[in-house]
Amino acid sequence: MAELAIGILGLVGAVDLCFKYGARLMKLCAAFRDAADEFKERILRIEASWLKTTTQLEFMRRVESLMGPYHRAIYEKLLEVLQSKLNIVISKLDRVRRESDKGNDTSSSSGSNTKVMPSGWKYALRKGSIDEAIDELEGWQRTADPSWYLILKIASPKIDQALVNDDEATITSLHAAKTIRAGLRDIKGDGSAGVFLPSNELARMTTTDIPFCEAQMATRVSVRKGHQGFLLTKVDYPPEAKVHAVRRDLRDLARKLSHDNPSTFNLLPCKGVIQHIDATTTGMPARVTFTIVFRTPPNLKYPRSLRGELVSKIEGVTLSDKFDIARQMATSISYVHTFGFVHKNICPETMVTFTEPRAFSCRTLFLIGFGSFRKDEGMTYRIGDDKWEKNLYRHPSRQGLNPSDEYVMQHDIYSLGVCLLELGLGKSFVDYDAKDGRPVLSPLLSPLIGLQGDTTLLSNPDALKKHFVRLACDELPRYMGRRYAAVVKTCLTCLDRENTDFGDEQEFLDSDGVVVGVRYIEKVLSQLHEICV
Image 1 (cartoon, rainbow, N blue to C red):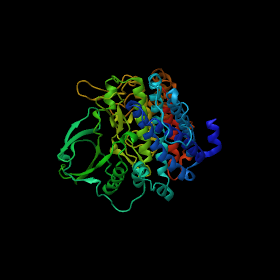
Image 2: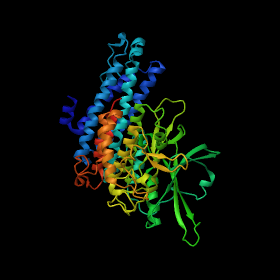
Image 3: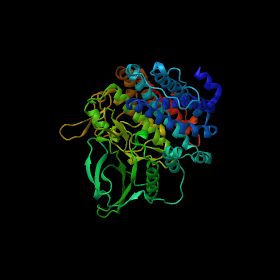
Image 4: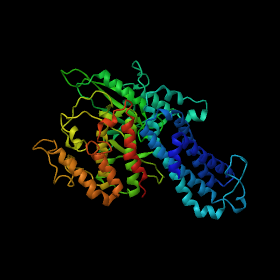
């Protein structure tokens, strides 16, 4: 019935219907205001989640006319799910009311001073199901966020007008959206103030290597801010690239990543960029190099690369943790594309997991390694390398010293597919020689996939891709289920013409680059979020 109602009402009507259910839920939460602390903590979680949802729904109502039909249809499906989640939470809370409070009306807009109390034995009996319902409501927000932030890519002044509101609470909630929107707009001039850090900044930090990772951890202690943690990534750009163009792209990347929502985006906030002048090679002109400095959340510790996790056979990682890590991987790539970039270097070495001490939560994963990034519509030099351990994660058309195809977003999606396959199987595709630490092909691949003679190039990239697809179809379902395996296959075949989800390039030629993002959310990200363990 909810689906039929949304189909009739359209997006705006569906938003209004969600507000109706939300108002009823907030009234019920307010009625429990005198409950014990343990119960009130759950009420606060509900209220905080609904505050953010309200902000996004209000914004959605203002810009609905700017959304394409496909994007609108996806969000209508999300709102259908939201209605269901709100109804479930309302039902769970209503069932724990004391019998003596059953006559108190909490369903209408009148009687806002109504008070009810939870029954002790009813709450004890349904505590687990209430927590589960709240978790699912918060989970809906994480599922809907990528679709909502994707609206910010639409090039219309009405988007900027909709972000302006007199409501102070709304302004606070939209702070991240405004930051992203400002970064997505073309800004005249260099505008490097506050982005490029002093060249001696690294000298003030203590750095340590992260095993099997392309980044370094760094710490610094200041009198004003105390102990601070950072993560450093070096930028590698081809000799053909102009330094001023690299600076411009780094400036834009730093601005777009200057957010304060690392857990939402699974991308670390950027502190800035350090420029170095490398004049160590005699007789050669000085080369300019760059290091991107990311802030690490103070509550997260023990960084470890995904490669390190895989080499150790994913020790201590439960099946549900694997799915959480997979969702975070897919989420981070969605936002990289929303911010207007392609990553070009997605592999286990560019993904770092953190854990929170004294917490029983899953590892938190962040995508790093922006050393080869570029704007999604920026110049591509079609320059690769001969490192087989890198080419392992690249589509066949992007392998080798001179890739045949220009880099597009779907190439990142392919790389994600390889990483999801590796995570699901729980076996690293790259091993390391015990004597010299040299990377060697995993036994899972080496019988079929070799190297070209004495070179470090993969001998048959197309055979490698087919082997990955076979593993996804035949082996992966035993470890992660058929639905997860189907997502991996979709990613691995996203550039195949036979792939009905991504294969037709003509479908993705919209000026804002929104359609491919919506399709990715529908066919990859949402599918991963819907898997229940």
